[in-house]
Length: 369
Image 1 (cartoon, one colour):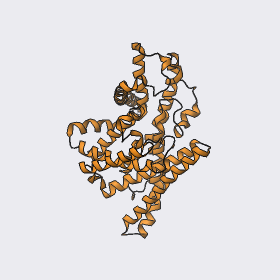
Image 2 (tube, rainbow, N blue to C red):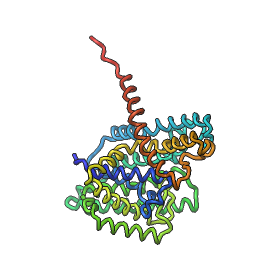
Image 3 (cartoon, helix red, strand yellow):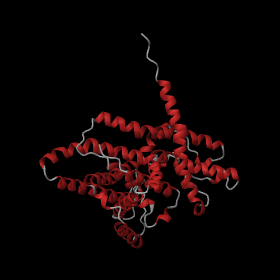
Image 4 (cartoon, one colour):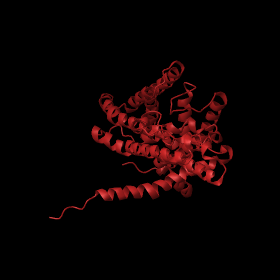
């Protein structure tokens, strides 16, 4: 069993802060490391760190386990927020209303995931599910005979896989551009392209952990070099932002390059921070709660807006979408803080007690004989 790496926990914390910051429209403060230039590939990389290429999973058990931990929560919260949208309409937030649909509750998470506004980040969870299933059930079994045939040349085989997945990511970028230029744009295509793009970063995470290359990153000189590279890319390119959610890329190479440099830079920063117990404890705690933050950050933004409505700064009708922010240039940090704190409190003090109560209710005492 691999030893717990504090750096990974801190990196997860930094990554989820970047996600919330991106949704709070405060990405400009991170230039040249804009959240939308690396943050989603970072989480596939993080998941890949724990992949075992030589471990064979029982297919049905693996799918069911990951469906329970990933897809079941997304479906539950799709239902919850579908109902929330019906309730808040009566409070005057009419622009956030969408009609209730069983089909959207069950299936929209595999497409845009934005049927009910607050659920729009959920696309990442379903994409991660399919990437995990592919690597655990397909890659491992395809790799096994190749590993036997190339015994003693493990690095060559892994380089071959890496190049294959890099080619897949490049094709995803190319076909995404073609799709948006020529059409038709469909969420089935978008979903497949997302998986192909994400698979490369998942495998990079595996390689980084397997060959322990990340130990070189927490170095000031390395971080300076990475910063200069990213700064140069930002200065010469149109934009470093790309929207993995809908696979709409403006440049065929930048999404891969900026994601790799962004991941490396953030890993180095996390490594330095992890040497400070106080800072690492806070960020590791945030990272440990990354999933609730993904689920509820946009609803936390909404609660800030509800408070602003109560104080008379805005009206419910002004809140025209789930990511609405009042005076973002001055208030973005309030939304970011709420997007982190509220989901953690919500999860710990409401959802977990309810889950325990529900589980206790289903456990019936054994009949006496």
